[in-house]
Image (cartoon, rainbow, N blue to C red; front, top):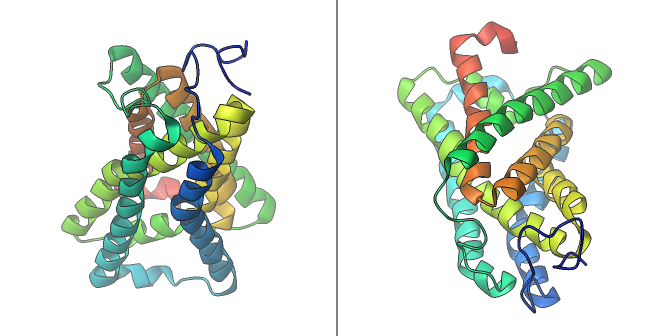
Length: 253
């Protein structure tokens, strides 16, 4: 058990409150919040493998707006449910879980983490594409490549760099990572939350690289004790992809 007597993890929290992440509230939140996202991502990945989406379809502005709006509503609702129930499940306040102002040290960790995440995730993706001889884009990247309307590009950037990190870090790091780490330690928590994070994106090829990126995000969150730090790392990582596609598209072809 990861508690105040564990020599590996004594710095945060210094002790888990009695009843923190008990079986009933944890399983409930897993079923209501995490399972639908991961399950849908796995289903989407299976469908993509059998009937790949035509990338040109994302040139339709109405489709882009519909996809972004639906994702925002669903993930926002799940993250909202989680935020309201986290203090009950963890027996820790939101501040104790890391929702507090960023310090200079946190900002530095977040920035360095985004560089490491870019190297790990993109490097892993390149290796997988080489081994399996595939050039399939992640769905969000395929969508981004077809955005030519500046307004849609701004909307996509806001979603990918602001809203998605806020929601996904709450779900996969603040809840899932902590709930797993509570009993099984840092590495198990980081790997479990990273794998679920990767699978939830609905792309079999990108799942493992994103899972590795999720481990980096867990490390940033754990070392800074700040949820906004991993959110910033996540947002910066997404912004690098957007900038590369917009400014130097030949680098990602």
